[in-house]
Length: 609
Image (cartoon, rainbow, N blue to C red; front, side, top):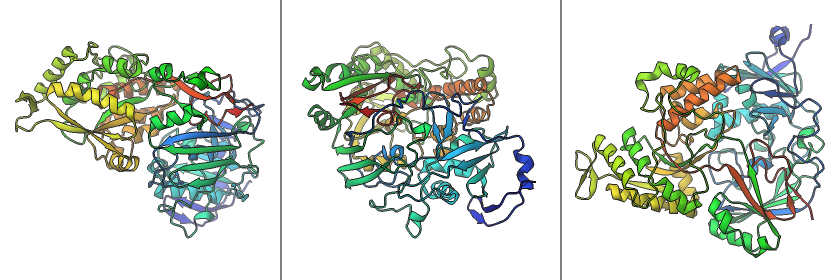
């Protein structure tokens, strides 16, 4: 009989040293077999002997140096803690997880630091076997103790994004010398995949060091292809490709992380970034405004061919972008007020002014994908999921909800009339040029924005003109990045800009985005303060779905609840990625279904003279 040696069994915050007989789990593992990969539903697409990811160029040359740009500043180089402003690229370049994601499948993972993954049919636990060759950038091996310490530390003292998984772990057991088993306390088929995606840090680096209050110089040691080789506080960070990177020959890494050096420079605002790019001080920049892409990128270096414009289409959901309303505060706790404020948003005019009318409007949280709600009344499985909550649902959930449209003119009289009617229904009436409630209090609120985002300021100014027609007093509060992060984390705002990207395989992150428990936790992305039992139920249905069809139905039902919840004044979609770059930067001809993102450029690009 096979026997296993267990030690350091973790049961949430309790660590115990114990020896258990392998026969206790032998029967538990009979139905499971180690595999090179795992998919949320069905089998992973790539075979064990795949050469490279399908959108990578395994023949891409190594070399070259590029400079990218961020706006604002930074005061931390630890992307895993709650405090500080960190260059957002770091966690994608310097650290790795047990498994890596194929962005050409809705949700599938393949071995990275782990050489295999093992799960039972119900996915109530997962076993990872570490690669013996996996090493940190200082040359020390990755151990099971490092993995367990990372899960516990990030789950209890790390950034809020890591807390949810830790709360759903019942225990972690070390098996032999290089494997660990994680058992879950919640029925949730996605947890095994999420466990494979947590960043792994080095335990010994933080012995006697306060992880939560790390200094700028306390840069976490990772296993990733890049290390921070230099930095100047608030000005730039230099990342260098580790010549001793352990995973250089791994199939998952072929054709990736090809640049020798990546410098991230920091600038005051987007306009300064653009001027630096025109002058050749920056190698590449993303442009999210279709009109700016068509009109601003015609400077001499583009005309000469020194700069190339590359468009990258994707098949992922639109997500939600717009001005989010804080429903923890009056008057945004009234759905009729929220509907009025959405109606007053002169989208057609604003879109034409800001983007040239090129970018289509977001019509739901999952628009541009098969996960989006279908038009008209809810039917079939979607209706079945929502019916138990019928008496509590807002208008439009079951019947179908379409965003109000404006007449496209500056004054938008039709939209203003409808918005005013909704306001009157909710107890706000015009009095002496202001919109007042029964107590005589005039409606007034503030739109919180980062001071270096000129486009959002333009949209807010145009929106404020419409709200003034209603008799609402609106002010725009411009703050720096640190203040913005602090205030949004504490939900200290009335209305603010909101961008939440979504995937083709939504899962546990949905609890964090708009689940009821997240509404009262500091620092979650649930900025709107959504607390809706039907939303919670649809997320649970999604997480417990055993087939892709069940997951799609639950997501479409969730989409109806979110868009009809009137939490956000939606803007336009970003269906195409737009990257302007120096001609020496090349990208693969095959584009993943997820298109561009922090996982695509610069990871899969290369330098070619």
